[in-house]
Amino acid sequence: MTNVGNSAASRDKAFYLHPYTNLKTHETVGPLVIERGSGVHVFDDSGKSYIEGMAGLWCTSLGFGEERLVEAAARQMRKLPFYHSFGHKAHDPGIDLAEALIGMAPVPMSKVFFTSSGSEANDTVVKLVWYHNNALGRPNKKKIIARQKGYHGVTVASASLTGLPHLHRDFDLPIAGILHTDCPHFYRYGEDGETEEDFAIRMANQLEQLILAEGPDTIAAFIAEPVMGAGGVIVPPASYFDHIQPVLKRYDILFIADEVICGFGRTGSMFGSQTFNLKPDIITVAKALSSAYLPIAAVMISEPIYQTMVSQSEKIGTFGHGYTYSGHPVSAAVALETLKIYQERDIVGHVRSVAPTLQQGLRRFADHPLVGEVRGVGLIAGVEIVADKVTKAPFDPKLAIGGHVARFAQDHGLIVRAMGDTIGFCPPLVITAAELDDLVDRFGKALDATL
Ligand code: PLP
Image (cartoon, rainbow, N blue to C red; front, side):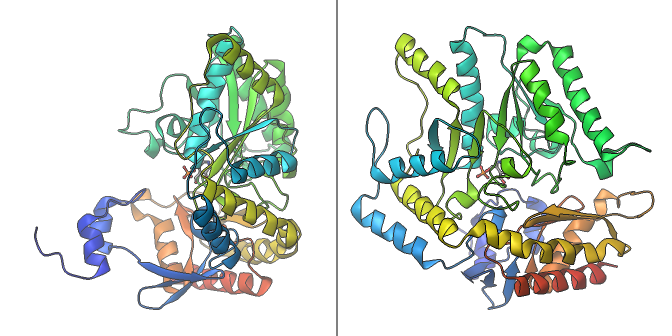
Protein backbone atom coordinates (compact mmCIF):
# COMPACT_ATOMS: atom_id res chain seq x y z
CA MET A 1 0.00 0.00 0.00
CA THR A 2 1.39 3.45 -0.90
CA ASN A 3 2.06 5.85 1.95
CA VAL A 4 -0.87 8.26 2.10
CA GLY A 5 0.39 10.36 4.98
CA ASN A 6 -0.98 10.59 8.47
CA SER A 7 -3.35 13.51 8.34
CA ALA A 8 -7.08 12.85 8.53
CA ALA A 9 -7.51 14.77 5.27
CA SER A 10 -5.05 12.67 3.29
CA ARG A 11 -6.39 9.39 4.71
CA ASP A 12 -9.93 10.56 3.94
CA LYS A 13 -9.01 11.22 0.32
CA ALA A 14 -7.21 7.88 0.12
CA PHE A 15 -9.89 5.62 1.59
CA TYR A 16 -13.29 7.24 2.10
CA LEU A 17 -15.93 7.19 -0.62
CA HIS A 18 -18.15 10.12 0.37
CA PRO A 19 -21.93 9.92 0.02
CA TYR A 20 -23.65 12.62 -1.99
CA THR A 21 -20.40 14.40 -2.93
CA ASN A 22 -18.77 15.64 -6.14
CA LEU A 23 -16.02 13.05 -6.09
CA LYS A 24 -13.80 14.91 -8.54
CA THR A 25 -13.94 18.16 -6.55
CA HIS A 26 -13.32 16.23 -3.36
CA GLU A 27 -9.96 15.03 -4.66
CA THR A 28 -8.90 18.68 -4.66
CA VAL A 29 -10.75 20.30 -1.75
CA GLY A 30 -10.68 17.32 0.63
CA PRO A 31 -12.81 17.02 3.75
CA LEU A 32 -13.86 19.38 6.51
CA VAL A 33 -13.20 17.09 9.46
CA ILE A 34 -15.61 17.77 12.31
CA GLU A 35 -14.33 16.59 15.65
CA ARG A 36 -16.88 17.50 18.26
CA GLY A 37 -20.09 19.35 18.94
CA SER A 38 -21.70 21.34 21.72
CA GLY A 39 -25.16 22.91 21.65
CA VAL A 40 -25.74 24.33 18.17
CA HIS A 41 -21.99 24.46 17.42
CA VAL A 42 -19.55 21.98 15.90
CA PHE A 43 -15.76 22.24 15.91
CA ASP A 44 -13.33 21.13 13.22
CA ASP A 45 -9.96 19.49 13.76
CA SER A 46 -8.23 22.87 13.87
CA GLY A 47 -10.54 23.96 16.70
CA LYS A 48 -12.58 26.40 14.56
CA SER A 49 -16.23 26.58 15.61
CA TYR A 50 -19.28 26.73 13.34
CA ILE A 51 -22.98 27.27 13.94
CA GLU A 52 -24.53 24.09 12.53
CA GLY A 53 -27.18 25.91 10.48
CA MET A 54 -28.47 22.64 9.03
CA ALA A 55 -28.64 20.51 12.19
CA GLY A 56 -26.27 18.20 10.33
CA LEU A 57 -28.60 16.89 7.64
CA TRP A 58 -31.89 18.40 8.92
CA CYS A 59 -31.72 16.09 11.91
CA THR A 60 -29.89 16.94 15.18
CA SER A 61 -32.90 18.75 16.57
CA LEU A 62 -31.61 18.77 20.16
CA GLY A 63 -28.18 19.99 19.11
CA PHE A 64 -24.91 18.32 20.03
CA GLY A 65 -24.06 16.99 23.47
CA GLU A 66 -27.50 16.18 24.92
CA GLU A 67 -26.39 14.01 27.84
CA ARG A 68 -29.80 12.47 28.45
CA LEU A 69 -29.64 10.80 25.05
CA VAL A 70 -26.15 9.50 25.75
CA GLU A 71 -27.35 8.06 29.03
CA ALA A 72 -30.48 6.53 27.48
CA ALA A 73 -28.28 4.75 24.92
CA ALA A 74 -25.77 3.53 27.52
CA ARG A 75 -28.54 2.28 29.84
CA GLN A 76 -30.20 0.31 27.06
CA MET A 77 -26.89 -1.03 25.72
CA ARG A 78 -26.07 -2.46 29.12
CA LYS A 79 -29.51 -3.97 29.57
CA LEU A 80 -30.20 -5.37 26.10
CA PRO A 81 -27.95 -4.09 23.29
CA PHE A 82 -29.85 -5.88 20.57
CA TYR A 83 -32.97 -7.77 20.06
CA HIS A 84 -35.26 -8.08 17.08
CA SER A 85 -38.98 -8.15 16.53
CA PHE A 86 -39.27 -10.81 13.80
CA GLY A 87 -41.86 -13.47 14.38
CA HIS A 88 -43.45 -12.76 17.74
CA LYS A 89 -40.42 -11.36 19.56
CA ALA A 90 -40.55 -7.91 21.12
CA HIS A 91 -38.75 -5.61 23.56
CA ASP A 92 -39.89 -2.74 25.75
CA PRO A 93 -38.21 0.21 23.96
CA GLY A 94 -39.80 -0.84 20.67
CA ILE A 95 -43.25 -1.29 22.20
CA ASP A 96 -43.01 1.99 24.15
CA LEU A 97 -41.88 3.93 21.10
CA ALA A 98 -44.64 2.51 18.89
CA GLU A 99 -47.20 3.47 21.54
CA ALA A 100 -45.72 6.97 21.87
CA LEU A 101 -45.83 7.57 18.11
CA ILE A 102 -49.41 6.36 17.75
CA GLY A 103 -50.32 8.60 20.70
CA MET A 104 -48.88 11.71 19.08
CA ALA A 105 -49.68 11.07 15.39
CA PRO A 106 -51.34 14.05 13.69
CA VAL A 107 -54.24 11.88 12.47
CA PRO A 108 -55.46 8.55 13.87
CA MET A 109 -52.92 5.87 13.01
CA SER A 110 -53.01 2.19 13.85
CA LYS A 111 -49.54 0.61 13.77
CA VAL A 112 -45.87 1.53 13.50
CA PHE A 113 -43.22 -0.29 11.46
CA PHE A 114 -39.59 0.62 12.23
CA THR A 115 -36.65 1.04 9.88
CA SER A 116 -33.20 2.57 10.28
CA SER A 117 -33.44 5.42 7.75
CA GLY A 118 -35.86 7.63 5.90
CA SER A 119 -34.97 5.90 2.64
CA GLU A 120 -35.83 2.50 4.09
CA ALA A 121 -39.06 3.91 5.49
CA ASN A 122 -40.16 5.21 2.09
CA ASP A 123 -38.95 2.04 0.40
CA THR A 124 -41.09 0.09 2.85
CA VAL A 125 -44.05 2.30 1.99
CA VAL A 126 -43.74 1.47 -1.72
CA LYS A 127 -43.86 -2.23 -0.86
CA LEU A 128 -46.76 -1.76 1.59
CA VAL A 129 -48.78 0.13 -1.00
CA TRP A 130 -48.27 -2.65 -3.56
CA TYR A 131 -49.00 -5.34 -0.95
CA HIS A 132 -52.14 -3.51 0.15
CA ASN A 133 -53.57 -3.30 -3.35
CA ASN A 134 -52.70 -6.92 -4.10
CA ALA A 135 -54.51 -7.87 -0.90
CA LEU A 136 -57.52 -5.87 -2.05
CA GLY A 137 -57.53 -7.69 -5.41
CA ARG A 138 -56.46 -4.59 -7.34
CA PRO A 139 -53.23 -5.79 -8.99
CA ASN A 140 -53.28 -2.98 -11.55
CA LYS A 141 -53.60 -0.14 -9.03
CA LYS A 142 -49.87 0.18 -8.30
CA LYS A 143 -48.45 3.43 -9.65
CA ILE A 144 -47.23 6.01 -7.17
CA ILE A 145 -47.18 9.73 -7.93
CA ALA A 146 -44.42 11.83 -6.37
CA ARG A 147 -43.41 15.39 -7.26
CA GLN A 148 -40.62 17.08 -9.18
CA LYS A 149 -38.04 18.25 -6.61
CA GLY A 150 -39.50 16.05 -3.88
CA TYR A 151 -36.90 14.15 -1.87
CA HIS A 152 -37.66 10.74 -0.43
CA GLY A 153 -34.30 8.99 -0.22
CA VAL A 154 -31.76 7.06 -2.25
CA THR A 155 -32.63 3.34 -2.21
CA VAL A 156 -33.89 2.01 -5.54
CA ALA A 157 -37.56 2.69 -4.79
CA SER A 158 -37.17 5.82 -2.64
CA ALA A 159 -34.72 7.39 -5.13
CA SER A 160 -37.32 6.69 -7.79
CA LEU A 161 -39.84 8.69 -5.74
CA THR A 162 -37.31 11.50 -5.39
CA GLY A 163 -37.88 14.03 -8.16
CA LEU A 164 -34.30 15.21 -8.67
CA PRO A 165 -32.63 14.29 -11.99
CA HIS A 166 -29.13 13.70 -10.57
CA LEU A 167 -30.52 10.93 -8.36
CA HIS A 168 -31.83 9.13 -11.45
CA ARG A 169 -29.28 9.86 -14.13
CA ASP A 170 -26.92 6.95 -14.84
CA PHE A 171 -28.53 4.94 -12.03
CA ASP A 172 -31.20 3.66 -14.46
CA LEU A 173 -33.97 5.18 -12.33
CA PRO A 174 -36.82 5.76 -11.79
CA ILE A 175 -38.22 2.25 -11.72
CA ALA A 176 -41.42 1.61 -13.68
CA GLY A 177 -44.64 2.83 -12.15
CA ILE A 178 -43.30 5.91 -10.36
CA LEU A 179 -44.58 9.18 -11.83
CA HIS A 180 -43.79 12.79 -10.99
CA THR A 181 -46.24 15.67 -10.96
CA ASP A 182 -45.47 19.38 -10.74
CA CYS A 183 -43.52 21.12 -8.02
CA PRO A 184 -45.69 23.65 -6.14
CA HIS A 185 -43.12 26.44 -6.16
CA PHE A 186 -45.05 29.62 -6.91
CA TYR A 187 -41.96 31.87 -7.23
CA ARG A 188 -40.49 29.62 -9.95
CA TYR A 189 -43.53 28.15 -11.67
CA GLY A 190 -46.35 30.65 -11.10
CA GLU A 191 -47.52 32.17 -14.38
CA ASP A 192 -47.89 35.87 -15.16
CA GLY A 193 -51.01 37.27 -13.50
CA GLU A 194 -51.65 34.09 -11.52
CA THR A 195 -52.33 34.39 -7.78
CA GLU A 196 -50.95 31.81 -5.36
CA GLU A 197 -54.48 30.46 -5.02
CA ASP A 198 -54.86 30.14 -8.83
CA PHE A 199 -51.50 28.40 -8.91
CA ALA A 200 -52.52 25.92 -6.19
CA ILE A 201 -55.69 25.10 -8.12
CA ARG A 202 -53.69 24.64 -11.32
CA MET A 203 -51.31 22.25 -9.51
CA ALA A 204 -54.28 20.17 -8.32
CA ASN A 205 -55.80 20.21 -11.83
CA GLN A 206 -52.52 19.02 -13.31
CA LEU A 207 -52.37 16.20 -10.79
CA GLU A 208 -55.92 15.22 -11.73
CA GLN A 209 -55.07 15.30 -15.44
CA LEU A 210 -52.11 13.00 -14.83
CA ILE A 211 -54.35 10.59 -12.91
CA LEU A 212 -56.96 10.62 -15.67
CA ALA A 213 -54.36 10.19 -18.42
CA GLU A 214 -52.82 7.18 -16.65
CA GLY A 215 -56.19 5.79 -15.58
CA PRO A 216 -57.34 6.20 -11.95
CA ASP A 217 -57.50 2.41 -11.60
CA THR A 218 -53.72 2.31 -12.03
CA ILE A 219 -52.79 4.93 -9.39
CA ALA A 220 -52.24 3.62 -5.86
CA ALA A 221 -50.71 6.50 -3.93
CA PHE A 222 -49.38 10.04 -3.84
CA ILE A 223 -46.38 10.99 -1.70
CA ALA A 224 -45.42 14.48 -0.54
CA GLU A 225 -43.30 16.26 2.02
CA PRO A 226 -45.35 18.99 3.74
CA VAL A 227 -42.42 21.35 3.00
CA MET A 228 -39.96 20.10 0.38
CA GLY A 229 -36.51 20.03 1.95
CA ALA A 230 -33.62 18.83 -0.20
CA GLY A 231 -35.41 20.03 -3.36
CA GLY A 232 -34.72 23.59 -2.13
CA VAL A 233 -36.95 24.29 0.91
CA ILE A 234 -40.15 24.81 -1.05
CA VAL A 235 -43.13 25.89 1.03
CA PRO A 236 -46.36 25.17 -0.86
CA PRO A 237 -49.10 27.81 -1.22
CA ALA A 238 -51.30 27.79 1.90
CA SER A 239 -54.22 26.09 0.12
CA TYR A 240 -52.17 23.68 -2.04
CA PHE A 241 -52.91 20.53 -0.04
CA ASP A 242 -56.56 21.59 0.44
CA HIS A 243 -56.89 21.34 -3.35
CA ILE A 244 -54.75 18.21 -3.75
CA GLN A 245 -56.42 16.02 -1.10
CA PRO A 246 -59.96 15.94 -2.59
CA VAL A 247 -58.43 14.80 -5.91
CA LEU A 248 -56.81 11.86 -4.13
CA LYS A 249 -60.05 10.99 -2.34
CA ARG A 250 -62.01 11.15 -5.60
CA TYR A 251 -59.89 8.39 -7.14
CA ASP A 252 -59.27 6.29 -4.02
CA ILE A 253 -55.57 7.13 -3.91
CA LEU A 254 -53.61 6.75 -0.67
CA PHE A 255 -51.89 9.85 0.67
CA ILE A 256 -48.38 9.34 2.08
CA ALA A 257 -46.92 12.22 4.11
CA ASP A 258 -43.12 12.14 4.21
CA GLU A 259 -42.48 13.84 7.55
CA VAL A 260 -38.80 12.87 7.61
CA ILE A 261 -37.77 16.54 7.86
CA CYS A 262 -40.99 18.21 9.01
CA GLY A 263 -41.82 15.78 11.81
CA PHE A 264 -41.28 16.73 15.48
CA GLY A 265 -41.62 20.48 15.55
CA ARG A 266 -39.70 21.73 12.53
CA THR A 267 -42.54 23.76 10.99
CA GLY A 268 -43.91 25.10 14.28
CA SER A 269 -46.35 22.20 14.86
CA MET A 270 -45.44 18.73 16.05
CA PHE A 271 -45.96 17.55 12.44
CA GLY A 272 -45.94 19.34 9.10
CA SER A 273 -49.28 17.61 8.51
CA GLN A 274 -50.75 19.87 11.22
CA THR A 275 -49.20 23.03 9.78
CA PHE A 276 -50.67 22.27 6.33
CA ASN A 277 -53.83 20.37 7.33
CA LEU A 278 -52.87 17.03 5.80
CA LYS A 279 -54.91 13.89 6.40
CA PRO A 280 -52.48 11.16 5.33
CA ASP A 281 -53.09 7.39 5.31
CA ILE A 282 -49.39 6.67 5.83
CA ILE A 283 -46.70 8.79 7.52
CA THR A 284 -42.94 8.33 7.46
CA VAL A 285 -40.65 9.88 10.09
CA ALA A 286 -36.89 9.71 10.78
CA LYS A 287 -34.13 12.21 11.62
CA ALA A 288 -35.53 14.24 14.58
CA LEU A 289 -37.24 11.07 15.87
CA SER A 290 -33.96 10.38 17.71
CA SER A 291 -32.40 13.81 17.14
CA ALA A 292 -30.15 11.67 14.88
CA TYR A 293 -28.14 10.41 17.86
CA LEU A 294 -28.80 6.91 16.54
CA PRO A 295 -30.39 5.80 13.27
CA ILE A 296 -34.09 5.06 13.48
CA ALA A 297 -37.11 5.80 11.29
CA ALA A 298 -40.72 4.71 11.22
CA VAL A 299 -43.75 4.16 9.02
CA MET A 300 -47.17 4.76 10.55
CA ILE A 301 -50.17 3.17 8.83
CA SER A 302 -53.90 3.69 9.21
CA GLU A 303 -56.30 1.06 10.55
CA PRO A 304 -57.82 0.16 7.14
CA ILE A 305 -54.34 -0.52 5.72
CA TYR A 306 -53.47 -2.63 8.74
CA GLN A 307 -56.70 -4.60 8.37
CA THR A 308 -55.97 -5.53 4.75
CA MET A 309 -52.48 -6.63 5.82
CA VAL A 310 -53.89 -8.84 8.57
CA SER A 311 -56.36 -10.42 6.19
CA GLN A 312 -53.46 -11.12 3.84
CA SER A 313 -51.64 -12.98 6.65
CA GLU A 314 -54.79 -15.06 7.16
CA LYS A 315 -54.59 -16.01 3.47
CA ILE A 316 -50.87 -16.27 2.72
CA GLY A 317 -49.11 -16.34 6.08
CA THR A 318 -46.09 -14.31 7.09
CA PHE A 319 -45.80 -10.62 6.18
CA GLY A 320 -42.50 -11.00 4.38
CA HIS A 321 -40.79 -7.72 5.12
CA GLY A 322 -38.50 -6.57 7.94
CA TYR A 323 -34.96 -5.45 8.69
CA THR A 324 -32.50 -6.87 11.23
CA TYR A 325 -32.49 -3.41 12.79
CA SER A 326 -36.25 -2.75 12.64
CA GLY A 327 -36.90 -1.08 15.99
CA HIS A 328 -33.32 -1.53 17.28
CA PRO A 329 -33.71 -1.32 21.07
CA VAL A 330 -30.89 1.18 21.64
CA SER A 331 -32.13 3.49 18.88
CA ALA A 332 -35.69 3.10 20.18
CA ALA A 333 -34.60 4.00 23.73
CA VAL A 334 -32.86 7.12 22.42
CA ALA A 335 -35.91 8.07 20.36
CA LEU A 336 -38.18 7.66 23.39
CA GLU A 337 -35.96 9.93 25.46
CA THR A 338 -35.93 12.43 22.56
CA LEU A 339 -39.74 12.51 22.47
CA LYS A 340 -39.81 12.96 26.26
CA ILE A 341 -37.47 15.94 25.99
CA TYR A 342 -39.66 17.49 23.25
CA GLN A 343 -42.64 17.29 25.62
CA GLU A 344 -40.83 18.47 28.75
CA ARG A 345 -39.21 21.44 27.01
CA ASP A 346 -42.25 22.27 24.88
CA ILE A 347 -40.17 22.16 21.73
CA VAL A 348 -43.10 23.27 19.56
CA GLY A 349 -43.64 26.36 21.73
CA HIS A 350 -39.93 27.12 21.56
CA VAL A 351 -39.87 26.81 17.76
CA ARG A 352 -42.84 29.17 17.52
CA SER A 353 -41.18 31.71 19.76
CA VAL A 354 -37.82 31.83 17.93
CA ALA A 355 -38.95 31.15 14.33
CA PRO A 356 -39.66 34.85 13.60
CA THR A 357 -36.01 35.67 14.39
CA LEU A 358 -34.91 33.30 11.61
CA GLN A 359 -37.69 34.08 9.14
CA GLN A 360 -37.66 37.85 9.53
CA GLY A 361 -33.89 37.91 9.90
CA LEU A 362 -33.38 36.18 6.54
CA ARG A 363 -36.05 38.34 4.89
CA ARG A 364 -33.75 41.30 5.61
CA PHE A 365 -31.80 40.03 2.59
CA ALA A 366 -34.78 40.11 0.22
CA ASP A 367 -33.38 43.30 -1.33
CA HIS A 368 -29.86 41.95 -1.65
CA PRO A 369 -28.79 41.96 -5.32
CA LEU A 370 -28.09 38.21 -5.25
CA VAL A 371 -31.34 37.14 -3.58
CA GLY A 372 -34.35 36.07 -5.62
CA GLU A 373 -36.57 34.69 -2.87
CA VAL A 374 -36.45 34.09 0.87
CA ARG A 375 -38.88 31.41 1.99
CA GLY A 376 -39.57 29.22 4.98
CA VAL A 377 -41.76 28.37 7.93
CA GLY A 378 -40.87 27.57 11.54
CA LEU A 379 -37.18 26.72 11.73
CA ILE A 380 -36.67 25.74 8.10
CA ALA A 381 -35.80 28.29 5.43
CA GLY A 382 -34.29 28.73 1.99
CA VAL A 383 -32.66 31.66 0.25
CA GLU A 384 -32.59 31.38 -3.54
CA ILE A 385 -29.68 33.07 -5.29
CA VAL A 386 -30.34 34.55 -8.74
CA ALA A 387 -28.28 36.31 -11.39
CA ASP A 388 -31.11 38.76 -12.15
CA LYS A 389 -33.70 39.72 -9.55
CA VAL A 390 -36.19 41.04 -12.12
CA THR A 391 -36.20 38.16 -14.58
CA LYS A 392 -35.36 35.57 -11.84
CA ALA A 393 -32.70 34.23 -14.22
CA PRO A 394 -30.36 31.82 -12.43
CA PHE A 395 -26.57 31.88 -12.63
CA ASP A 396 -24.87 29.57 -15.10
CA PRO A 397 -24.99 26.19 -13.30
CA LYS A 398 -21.27 25.72 -14.06
CA LEU A 399 -20.57 28.57 -11.62
CA ALA A 400 -22.17 26.57 -8.78
CA ILE A 401 -23.06 29.83 -7.08
CA GLY A 402 -24.81 28.11 -4.17
CA GLY A 403 -21.61 26.24 -3.38
CA HIS A 404 -19.69 29.53 -3.30
CA VAL A 405 -22.14 31.09 -0.84
CA ALA A 406 -21.97 27.99 1.37
CA ARG A 407 -18.16 28.10 1.35
CA PHE A 408 -18.13 31.80 2.29
CA ALA A 409 -20.57 30.98 5.09
CA GLN A 410 -18.19 28.26 6.25
CA ASP A 411 -15.35 30.81 6.27
CA HIS A 412 -17.57 32.92 8.56
CA GLY A 413 -18.23 29.99 10.90
CA LEU A 414 -21.63 28.93 9.62
CA ILE A 415 -22.57 25.61 8.06
CA VAL A 416 -25.45 25.79 5.59
CA ARG A 417 -26.38 23.59 2.64
CA ALA A 418 -26.43 24.57 -1.01
CA MET A 419 -29.15 22.82 -2.97
CA GLY A 420 -28.48 24.06 -6.46
CA ASP A 421 -28.83 27.81 -6.11
CA THR A 422 -30.83 27.68 -2.88
CA ILE A 423 -29.14 27.91 0.47
CA GLY A 424 -30.92 25.84 3.13
CA PHE A 425 -31.28 26.62 6.83
CA CYS A 426 -32.53 24.05 9.30
CA PRO A 427 -30.80 24.70 12.64
CA PRO A 428 -31.21 22.57 15.75
CA LEU A 429 -34.66 23.25 17.22
CA VAL A 430 -33.09 24.23 20.54
CA ILE A 431 -31.35 27.23 19.01
CA THR A 432 -31.91 30.52 20.87
CA ALA A 433 -32.99 33.84 19.38
CA ALA A 434 -29.50 35.27 20.06
CA GLU A 435 -27.88 32.35 18.23
CA LEU A 436 -30.29 32.86 15.32
CA ASP A 437 -29.30 36.54 15.13
CA ASP A 438 -25.68 35.40 14.98
CA LEU A 439 -26.53 32.88 12.24
CA VAL A 440 -28.28 35.55 10.16
CA ASP A 441 -25.37 38.00 10.57
CA ARG A 442 -22.85 35.39 9.45
CA PHE A 443 -24.99 34.57 6.44
CA GLY A 444 -25.16 38.27 5.51
CA LYS A 445 -21.35 38.40 5.52
CA ALA A 446 -21.23 35.32 3.27
CA LEU A 447 -23.66 36.93 0.82
CA ASP A 448 -21.64 40.13 0.70
CA ALA A 449 -18.44 38.14 0.19
CA THR A 450 -20.08 36.46 -2.82
CA LEU A 451 -20.89 39.75 -4.59
N1 PLP B 1 -37.38 11.90 3.10
C1 PLP B 1 -37.00 13.17 3.27
C2 PLP B 1 -38.03 14.24 3.26
C3 PLP B 1 -35.66 13.48 3.49
O1 PLP B 1 -35.27 14.75 3.64
C4 PLP B 1 -34.72 12.43 3.54
C5 PLP B 1 -33.29 12.72 3.77
O2 PLP B 1 -32.84 13.84 3.75
C6 PLP B 1 -35.17 11.12 3.33
C7 PLP B 1 -36.51 10.89 3.14
C8 PLP B 1 -34.20 9.99 3.34
O3 PLP B 1 -33.74 9.75 4.62
P1 PLP B 1 -32.34 8.99 4.86
O4 PLP B 1 -31.25 9.88 4.37
O5 PLP B 1 -32.35 8.78 6.36
O6 PLP B 1 -32.41 7.71 4.13
